[in-house]
Image (tube, rainbow, N blue to C red; front, side, top):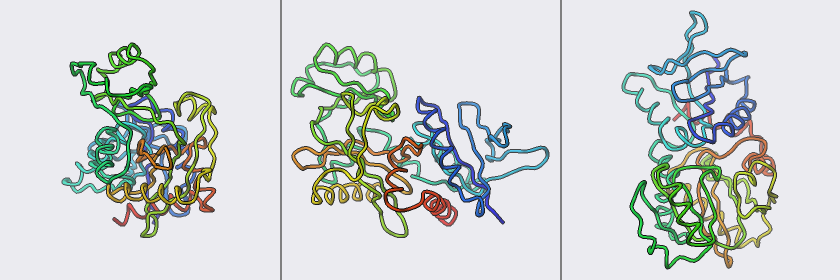
Length: 328
């Protein structure tokens, strides 16, 4: 009997639209010979199944829905929610909370704690530093913290000002002087759980796509990112204002170092499923930028393109992840 698989998409953040695109692509790559896929749109106070042009409300008590009198329950869910609640651990915590009541709905991707770490930029950077992987100099400011701006005197402009828990380059600004730094910090200080101020690195930006596949951590490719903008911001990522070159135009020795770093981070964080780790290469040394534990999966996204160039089929990887979730 075919298993019912829900594809979670949407979410509560500015990444809603991107997640819908990613979710639709995953939905289209689910093998319908093996599974019954359903699109599940997650919004605040509105969890619904989109099925044959109709919407059906999810019962959050057991994550089921009804078509007429027919109650449909899910055997597993494929998490493609970028941002909160899918990438910060909240949706995972929800599914874990159902287990004491005998409702076991496994999910793809990281568990609640690992998702929380990867989504918290400052915490993730601190974790990576302990693995002896280089990172840019940074200062973390807690939400609504009173700031003595002298703490930035030893940092060199330009600087990046980032909300600590957002993705797809939302809430990221590059500043070139103290006045702009102060203005941007004051604009962002009440958002999320804090702000990360980080020194800009001048080098080659790359993205490494990987996942645990058949017992090994497999790297699908290293993509070099060349942007028309000042940095790889939202427009560069999704509005065609960048070039993505796979494989990256870097020496084999540096490629090997990047693979080693990406695998080390993935393994030590105990990740599962698709992930994308971004670095910038400065003087032949990879500097960690960030990790996406639920990377973009739309047609414009880096990860699916890396999979194609690896001579693998996204449909096979999706089936592998679903099967892995069902059996673990």
